[in-house]
Image (cartoon, rainbow over all chains, first blue to last red; front, side):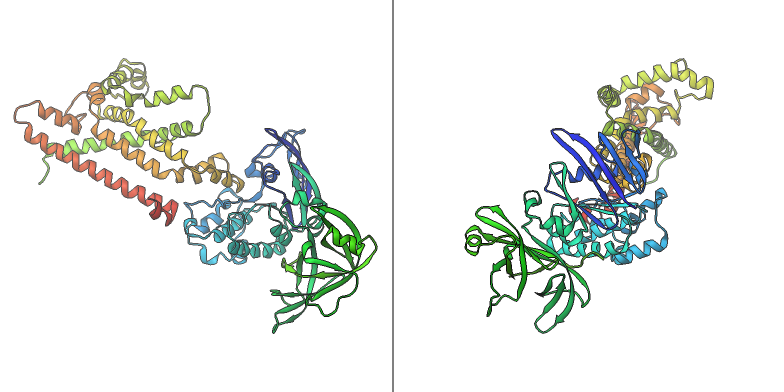
Length: 360
Length: 236
């Protein structure tokens, strides 16, 4: 099942003109507020009508301006999880979950049990939405959408109204889900952290247009997109695997295509894939292998790109095996070291932050 | 303190008139309230004014219009008589009609208000789950408006119990047929030695109103709690 979108819609002075495709896994629609993310998702759901273009879900055109097709929202079979949950306050959790069943969109009983189990909803079934925490509400909202036999799942900033703790809780459930369901998931977010952790593919949206599409680690790491990725600092996202866990010092060894990293507080078992984020400002460069140094991660590589990053800084891309690390150094340091393309260097990684499980 | 047979008759008739005035107009009031809350159409202001007319007109005028329309030779009354053999004038059903017309704006106002306060995003969510327009209305809009519907029903019921001007003009003051509580009280005040019975009936009216208020308050609170969960206690 795939989703193909190519639409145009004018909203006052703002123009949304976006095309992208989403297959299995999580596709993030990423961009700043006002980039047109929610409008795009609403168009897919049939809540906002495009002026032009086509929307195809699993081979069926649900919108085609030229052919005059505009399938109404209830018939599109799309699961939509809203930022504020939008649970029906007059119904219990169980009734919310079974709501789609009233309109012959319900899922079979076996799936009900499975989803309730997966999202940890069993204890909540008799409760009413008014008595749930924010995180619980969002889990119910996700379950309700999943149980409406959707061909596609839309999540519009489902974590935006939650505090950090709840965010983490719900993110873990979304990760579980990603490995479970086979329908495409479109995940709208303006948080780089969420996108890096959850998404397989990123569609970068700025000012109503798609400015980049690609694997999460590629798009989010590119310094040239920093203007659009906004708050996200440049850096690299690396797929790695846990090869050792030292419980005494709480340090894990992570192998990636290019070497190994040591990281603290890795909440993963040996053999588990993890996604690691290394910020550009946490990577220093040395021309010789430093000795007697506190930094644990020293990686050998070759400079593949040096570009001015503004504010007297220089962005350096370093190839370490098949992986590209990003480093941000001052212009002066760059000149003193004579950094240039092709130069062999050592990347000193001061901090490794984990963005947990990689795509299954 | 038992009721005399005559008092019982008056009381039961009043309850019957008020009950049917509410029951028969409820679907129309819900429809009118929905249209006023959600609809955008030319003439909406006019329609709104028309619905509210009984609230601002002297009740006697409303009764007179009803007499003109539903009288035996009136345009509607003659049709009803001819086709269905139904007569409203000088019947308790006519009293119910008068009470219904007078209570209608109150019912519409309360229901409309609750439609307007419903979070429409919930309706959009329902449509993504497969609900069509009717489905959304029945499963989301109406249940969420329930406290307002109950309030509207009570207001109209109380108005129906107290209806005097339109009733006496339209269906007159016939014992056992159209002599409701207010009409009976009025009748007693017009005769010598009627003070005692008038006071008794007035006390009955007070008790009845308090009971209706109490029942509706309990029902509204229960409906609100059903909707809001424990939040209801904090909010109300």
